[in-house]
Image (cartoon, rainbow, N blue to C red; front, side):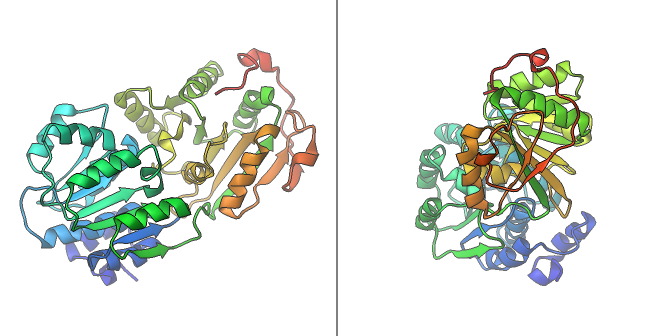
Length: 404
């Protein structure tokens, strides 16, 4: 099957071919025909399977066939600035002349964003906070809106974002096409979703919460004071390349990046307290290969598409099991293989079990002989010995407290 077979206009299928998209992915094959028919959908598929193209291609197709000229007709809501920017970038590549889009996000370009709204951008890709800011100023006219998209819908409908989504929903037309896309979705979130949609088509390309099948997953049980040493051992002894390291907190990300810098690792960090310019610069450098390690909180866990990330390391286990799926989904994308490593303590074994229940997969436990794991009875998965090098002096790396 080709993109032409899905019913897209020739100008879009030609752009797909020019960008190297020769065959639709499973989520694109299933979702695009329903979207062209105007159906509401809930679509669940693994990370890295082309969900952005699955909703943007039919949206642009419909805009080309509808009324021409300025006016906001599509609103795409994203949980992070990085995801919104990435979606806008793809939209600009695919949209022909006459279809306009803009990213409305916090932290950058207030005047530019205001000008694009006044010009009547056809597609608004926004984070809720900045969008509501412009709504309060009366700068957005939603009367012509025909389509609402919630990207990473499970995150958009949790208690952190739900009040903002409810507020936005009140000012957009009730008669519209609504699309929910995500890699994970709990029964509770699905219940909220169904109340916002009209007889939606449910598309599940893979079981919900399933990690990418090309990702090798391992977990190292360690003593809390050995986490930093083990991370350095993995980076240096195993010579890992193109590594994305996740922490739970901004402070933990700063501390970890500082230690890596002292060890002469080419690294940078991205989290909510950094300016948008700093976050963009860090992502750009990592994508270009100028830095080898990117330390991040979960602002980088969802939707960010970085070519050839070879390793994802969970230095801290995420608070929610669903976030584990999104984190490790930054590797093993677009047919490439990847490796996901989780460093956890005995007290976090219950969190590992919750992840395994969600994904339906056993994560292989690797008992490192030098860095803790003195009580193998608590390890439920397969255990193998590591051949990594000699133990290092942890105190030389900046303290014994767990990075939080």
